[in-house]
Image 1 (cartoon, rainbow, N blue to C red):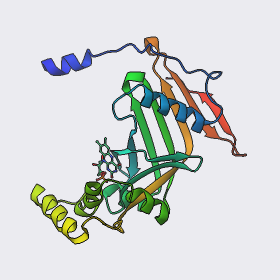
Image 2: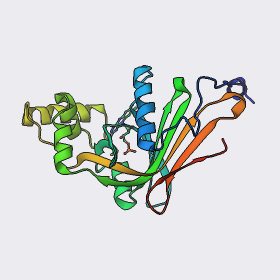
Image 3: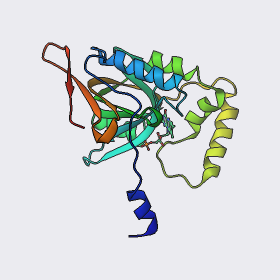
Length: 216
Ligand SMILES: Cc1cc2nc3c(=O)[nH]c(=O)nc-3n(C[C@H](O)[C@H](O)[C@H](O)COP(=O)(O)O)c2cc1C
């Protein structure tokens, strides 16, 4: 084994910051999530709003990437992207996805699984027009997930669309939001000696959330 891989195998950390119990957790997973997200924001962890999004392609192979959460309510969790991107194409073929937040400093992970749909055009328009101008031009300039000949392509596209739309770029038809409606949530809190706390919420037949502890 090389020196580097030996030292990777020796990396270990004891998780001792907090605990997550059945009694102290919220009955509603959305409330539990809002509490943890707010704690991540107030603790000033880096990019508390970054989440990993997993989708599955027509070849049944999963893929992941990081996106930013932009909305959250009882309807689900929202992010924005290019509908023609790899993730967009995969969601068009298979609308099931998984999200994961990892707040390293808090020793916390949240996993969310569910079905995904596009948000309304009005919702995408409202968010698009709240973005800084360079981000709005960027949505036009980047044929996300396509092979391009070099960075110069992006710079030239940005200049072209900037000149075309000036200060008022419309929302590109290929750009907008998705909303994942959670069917299952998992909250993981690191604990000592690898005896971590894991609570899963799933809906029963009547739509009520059932909280269960999973072995870590
Ligand atoms: C912190 C962070 C936040 C990101 N947020 C977004 C986002 O909100 N939307 C998006 O389309 N890409 C975002 N990206 C870029 C994606 O991770 C990814 O490169 C891109 O969406 C293309 O993914 P795909 O080819 O699998 O569709 C972000 C990347 C990072 C590192």
